[in-house]
Image 1 (tube, rainbow, N blue to C red):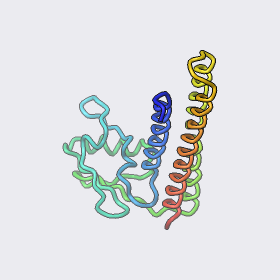
Image 2 (image 1 turned 90 degrees about the vertical axis):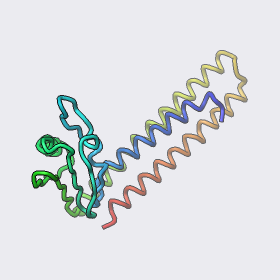
Image 3 (image 1 turned 180 degrees about the vertical axis):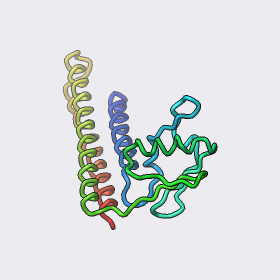
Length: 184
């Protein structure tokens, strides 16, 4: 691969990685501790990721258990969960917080699949925008006369192949996450 194109490949990889991290936060019937990744808890005045102040486990397929390292954090963690968009009410026994995930309804599954597809489309648009930026940079090189027309054409083909590959990977990620959500 031409080193001039490496930066664009890196950006496309980041778009795909971002999509995958968004997909990890979507719950698909099973308890997934990644739904808590974006939660922050006020820890001595500092918003701190939940994973840094508590032990998070999945003892059963539909339950996440959160055990704070300091009992004083239980109320703050409960509040963070309640104000988040997770949509689950935590239960606590004074030292543990449990999140029980209900079975998803058919309607909710279809909404989640729509959301998955929408996020996938955004990722594809991001990849295509990166392709446009790469092609614009190549046109500037061409106008400057630094590179021959044939080389520019070859590089543009390489950019297109790279774009096609990332779009295919995004489509695959959409398909995998959609089937995971629709599987009862």
